[in-house]
Length: 438
Ligand SMILES: *Cc1c(COP(=O)(O)O)cnc(C)c1O
Ligand SMILES: [Zn+2]
Image (cartoon, rainbow, N blue to C red; front, side, top):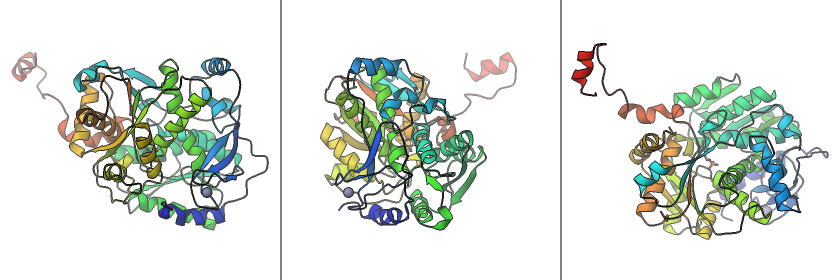
């Protein structure tokens, strides 16, 4: 049993789980199944297997029949993640409910960046800063909100490295839930303001994200937390499914084709794991041709437990105490780390990390080549892409998609010290001439 930390939290949560209403209906979602032992459980607000404490995930009765018809149905759907509702744990009428309708963000062909990186194949940036609260987290929250509704929760909550808190606050405001979210007290101002502005409660906790997460697990097991849906704890199996939409969109935007290589940031590892799940579903449904693909994980050197385990050839990770400007990825004990390792190894990918200076350089590189201002997590994926190419691990001749999962405006501090006006002048032509910029 390699998931000791999670097991302790799991025991608590399993005991305290409220029974699921018998009429829970979440579209094609049939049950929850254990990733470790395969045991199935009815849909409910539980996240760990009662038998082996392994993490639960959503199992489906996916549509059967003509892939061409399904493809046409998706293409005719709403211009957001709900076009994929037949493949998600949401009610069929989800698009008509009050939610933030994230997704269908731009897949940008990045020829300038490709030239700088020595990439000769097609290079794309999937730019998820275009979501309603400017990070990929709107995708996962949108699904968790539907589960929270189905299970009768009245308060939405989460433990967050920053972006999730804002996404939950906004989604709760729109969908009519109370919200109370928890973050490490020392996050970037942009993240704190984004988490508070939607009017819910925001609590800063003196500690790291891992402390915040432990606190939330205790709260779930306590009467204080009754009626609370923690999107990334007791609603985690549903939440995780939102990341599949990144896989669906990338493939649809490439003309229903899987790219050869995808570079994905890793915090808890949920996003990377579920992108792989999404790709496998597309193949199983006949929506894309079955071909090999490589998945690469990207971390910051100051919080690189998965990258270290990958390089050391280990299946288990040593938890670390994060120290990096990439705060949205600063999870020292990533719940889905072992699955990230499995996927990177199985697909012929890798997990790599970059230091803070390389993150800042990569943010600026993406900005100056493609006009995309990424948050530090985007600096991590672009920086890691560069490093993987130099190391010969990522093939520059193939089609590659690099994820930018958040907006640079939320992490201004990362670039502010080395970015600013080229000159400050008096409003005269002489003064401008002297500045030497003409
Ligand atoms: C949360 C987050 C991720 C990935 O998180 P996982 O826990 O690995 O799913 C990536 N980028 C940003 C900007 C995030 O906020
Ligand atoms: Zn199990």
